[in-house]
Structure formats: structure tokens, C-alpha cells
Length: 89
Image (cartoon, rainbow, N blue to C red; front, side, top):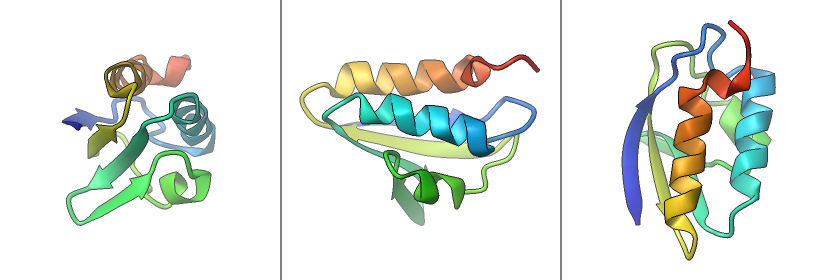
């Protein structure tokens, strides 16, 4: 299992389009991917769960990935968030 912490840095936070990109990215991997806060981790492959996190800019989220492709899954999710969900600011 890989665990890490990441900060949402894009101006609009984890809004609908960004959440959709996160879920699409996560769905491409067989590993179980959880994202959230210490008290509330959600399935990163569920759009409703990700949207309910209501993560605005500056929010720190934990990521937990477990499975056969956990290394590449974690890296892909981290890159997507660090690249501001590939959106212009």
C-alpha cells in the first residue's frame, strides 16, 4: 500500500470537471484508490464520493493506493493534481 498527502493547488479546487478527471484517471487502474481526510476516506472511482469532499484550493488530501498497479496509479493521480487537472488557471 502506498500512502501520501497532496494539496489541491488549482484555483477552483476539486470542482465537477476536476473531480470527473480524477475519477476517470482512477478508473483506469485495477488498484483500490482512496482519497480524502484522515476521518473520511472515499473511493476515488466514485464521482459522487469525490464531489462530496468539497476540496477547495489549499485543501490537503490523503491518498491511499493498494493493488497490482499501485505505483503507477499513485503517480498518475499525483501528477493530475499537481498539473492542476490539466486546466488553464
